[in-house]
Image (cartoon, rainbow, N blue to C red; front, side):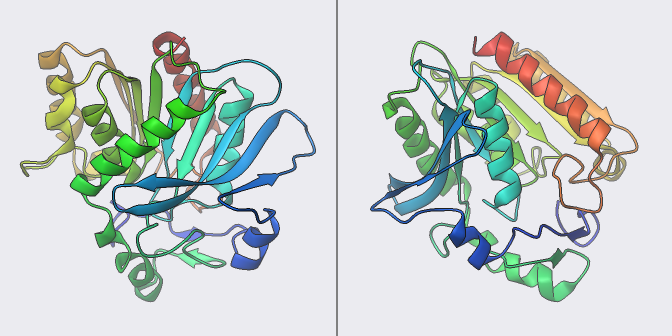
Length: 287
């Protein structure tokens, strides 16, 4: 998705600039601490060594003593940016250790775009399409192993609990790949307007379902379903065949990208319902 036909339109966030992004952190070797006024969440810029290099990412966890379940959050095609930091912070407030990586670390550090972005403009889309090939199923599998290991190495992570993973737009398949490479650790998978979950390719994400041990939450945009009405049924059949618990839901009237603030298609009531479903999933599957 996120293509010529199905996209979130104009995306605007006044914080989305390289200068503003730089002011959000305090430089340090490998890690930078960000002070938060609410004093509830610790937020850090971190680097994660992967098989292919060093990934930049953001780490969040509740302040205070304790250990919490971990979550790997895969952002959408625009990658790590302020709105996904907001999501990471919100999840941490709910009691999770959250890692949000930059999808394109192999070619560019986050943020990968600067200022307002309009998916309806070919020139804007082209900026992302030059980055997109750096994200592959095989590379994602290697990255996921590194990110899971990184989360497990954090002193705040409760390793007696399973890990959750969630993905948005092109991040949806990445969440599936994560469950496939770490079936013993991933206990919950959630996708929101995920594109490419089912394909005819040999590496289609849905083919990994039998290898996993997770519970799934699949939230589908109304216009995505209109364009590919068979996807939900194929997913339901795959979950049933693998005997994996799953909720597959179409949000009628909502458009691709509806859960991410800053875009023209953001639908707050529907996004909040999807968020509530996510928290319920993690409470059941992660503890």
